[in-house]
Length: 265
View (cartoon, one colour):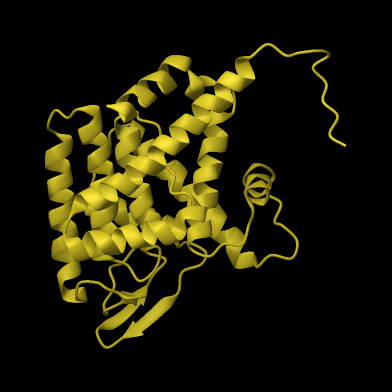
């Protein structure tokens, strides 16, 4: 119930209605999601890139492209969730195509060429660290089955906790199918955000500084065949975010002391 109370307090305070809060929240999602995948941009550099279009000096251009692609994919995801566009395999492929628009590669396989910039399913087997993912010939069926199950759940009445768990479960299941050659983590986190936006919930962020714990939670969930492991990790990330936002908002609302001017140096 704690997480439900946090969501209620977050909404009652009107945090999402504060000028530019939503904008900077999305930038924070961009920063952490791409940082997990190897981007070297700081959060300030990400903010300047998104708001002013200025690429940071001394950083690989590919990192900036990764960030701008993710931002476009995030805006697309939220827009489609808000208008209640039905979840589908094609929607997931559109999201993945935006994620990989400027950094994707072409893969030549025995079964044909796959352009990862198009959201096409992989035609080969992949691994990530110690994780092995389903054979490529199972990807289409597994993704279709996942979308069908998610839509069945979305069409049913769900409590707030069930809505959140659905978003976390969708995240876990899509990244575990690993349907694409590239961008699986980012696309899976965007699917999670799609479901949260669909239900008008605050959007979750997996903090990049918790990358190791995040990957371990995915591994442990698969090995133990226990989705509660991943749910618990994500609930912790979500609660931390809400508490942080509430604290910042309440601090901002406190009456200023003295002149209101602070010396920085």
